[in-house]
Image (cartoon, rainbow, N blue to C red; front, side, top):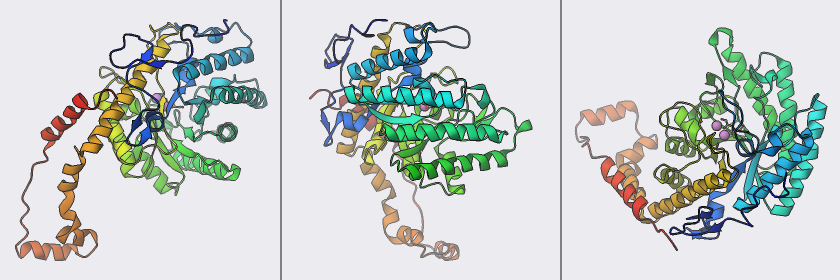
Length: 447
Ligand code: XLS
Ligand code: NI
Ligand code: NI
């Protein structure tokens, strides 16, 4: 293995602008560019994920790995391969200029023969990661534990019928939460990939809900015990790998948290392709999470309109992302969250530089969407009509109803007495769609 994995990128991907013909250059993303009083980099908080980008060889259910990833070839000693993987990952993160990264425990350290061995492997690799972070300035957006790959988790982690599996998962999360704290992570994520069911014939829904609530309560308690101040995030997904996952979407998660008095402890990490798998748009999930006070972070990718699974492609639609960015930026933007590239190359994209092309395109798409969102905010394209649409609730009968000053009977009597005669008004949908398009077509293209 060469000392450098990406020698064709000298130091850092530069800014080329919209007329640039250099594929390995940003066309829109300029970290220091000010947008609505904040640096682009600070708005977007881009993260590279270590699983799909550095720990997946390009396998699919029909075929073996196709990617050029020397450390995954199985010839090297596992810990040596793990070190090589981190070297390549941090070289990539630094050259891309991404301020953050994310990982699962098993992405950076191999599982050992016993829990103690796995834990020691992880501790050793965390020392290595800490050195890379120090050297490159890259920060941890979030850490998480892999509670879905090993056969012990086939029937779930916290929701497993076997309490020993619950205990094992607890041990893993305890260590990863402490690791995330040690690396000064901004968030900790729990994605319940196997927390769900394959068939209701063998599933006790009531028990599994209680188990999951207990698990998440223990995690929150431990967070406070160790003084971790980052945000705990649940990542909703409706299905895959299980037929049904309990954290179906943001609204479902909200109901669960409310039932178990956990609303203050958790927020959501919304993934674009999970939203669409749930039958929602990404825009819907972001707007809903914000409206119910649960918005935390984003795994930014996209699905394919022609198939129904989590294809995790790199985002490339400004039309779709602009609307989500609009919701995020107009309500104050990310606090601890960011845009994590939980994204997979296509299996034929086997060249190592495809990783750069994919991330550059995704980051530029986000940057351009940010400019459109800022333009919509500044021009009041949507906000003006929205305020006007609900204005009647601020005074008169509207304020009376919301203030609790009118009973059902009183409202009934007033309507019966006459004088209340609602007049339907246009929702102006097409006019607003045109206004959004106008912003997409015209928002400031270059400083
Ligand atoms: C899988 C999830 C997973 C989480 C982290 O669909 O997106 O990658 O983000 O465990
Ligand atoms: Ni994800
Ligand atoms: Ni996913």
